Amino acid sequence: MKFKLGRKSYLLLTIGGWFIFIGFAIWKIDEVKTRPIIPELIVSAFLVQLSVMNFIRNWYKRQRPTLLDWFRLSTFLAVVYSYFKLIDKFDGKIEWAYGSQYFDRFYILPSLLVVLCGLSTLFISENILRFIIKKRESIRNFSNTTYEIRSKTVFYPIVFIVLGIQAYLLISGKVGYGAEAEDATGAFSFVQQIFLSLSTFIFSALTIYKYSMNEKNRTLNFTFYFYFACQIILGLLSGMKGNVIYTFVIVLIPFLFSGRIVPKKYVIMAIIPALLLYPLMDNYRDTLRDFPKLSKEKSFGLALGKTFGTELTSNISAGGDKYSSRMEMFPALLTSIELEPKWKEYKDMTRYIYIPVSFFPRVIIPGKPIADTGEKLNYMISGLTGSSQTPTTFGWAYLEGGYTYVVLSFLIFSLFICFLEFKIGSDSLLGLLIYISLIITLFVVEHDIYFIISKILQNLVVYYFFYKLLFREKPKVNT
Image 1: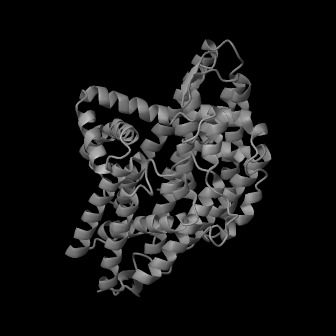
Image 2: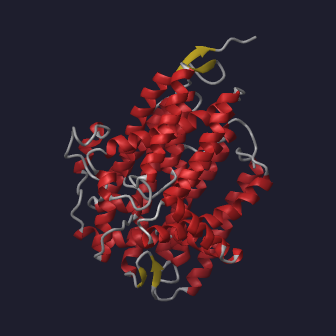
Image 3: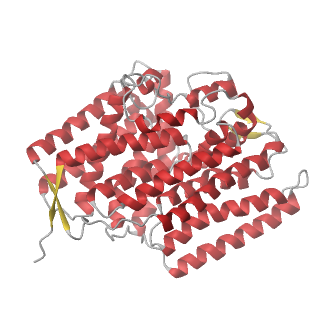
């Protein structure tokens, strides 16, 4: 599997994609008679262009999707495609996180317009900024700079100390599935987040040394493989599918950027484990809930037994269905549009004044916004506690106070991400470390823009400090 997109593939994806959309639109216009869907399809055509088609175009034209393109692709998969799947089902009950229920068809077009506002703002602002901000050509990059570990006697102990703390936080229940809300939002959650961010930083650095710099040092290569294996194990024990998937994404980015190709047989072989991951994690979570005093290791062992005690084809089918339903976020967006007048948390973007100091711990700034809005929205919808709901990034922006705040928040979002991409780049060690972190953050269309930016700022501070502490740059001597 090559990372670059050739001209034939570009034309095939573009022309083929539009033929499929036009055929789908004609079919649904003829089939759906209970409401006028032509306005919805006109808006959705713009959404297709501004999301997946823009992703494909930049992939071909720039040989690599931009950072915001990963957000656009996720938007298409989780929101636009979700709408397409449900377009003829709004006359009856629709299955979603809260069971089967009817949705008010009046909010379908406004929901699509909210997404259009957000994607249009990204498109316009990104292209304007591309002319205003000259993309930085790194003075120090992989072609002319050697990146060395300052002190191996400092680096390797830090690597294993951080790994040990990450394991402790997980085993003790401070992070991962089932962690208490106080652990995620309390005064000392900042310290936990630093260590989790630092763990990603170290693993990304090891991966870059392994693939982007072709490091042959045995100790470093052993450390990479050991850390890789531990991240998979800890990801599984966390009960969070995303943690396992992101582990492979972190490895894949430097691997592909180095010009390597993933053999098709490995891509095909990865499909079955990926599909089994969902039922395995579901069984593991059920065990954690049913036996709260049982250790995570034993709970995971029971989940393995239950998963592989079930027929393989049933698990694969269930995994595919779960992934599909997990990506159907249009009902949640539609619900947020309907509930906006009743939503009283964090209105009018007033919390955005905290962004410049959002990386300071809560013990210093106790009034800093708390990431508990998902739980509050869940309570508003269901009247139940102990769970969380996201209306997508677009829904969170709309809940600030309507369309105007969608435009404003997405403008800030675009300015921030584009500045980082154009000025930092990905052709140096620090740049690629930040780039990997950003892709992981942006390939999810669930989070609120305020918390996205806050998390990135915190990562930037951690990354810059430990980059200066652990690595040094030297001009490469050509022989």
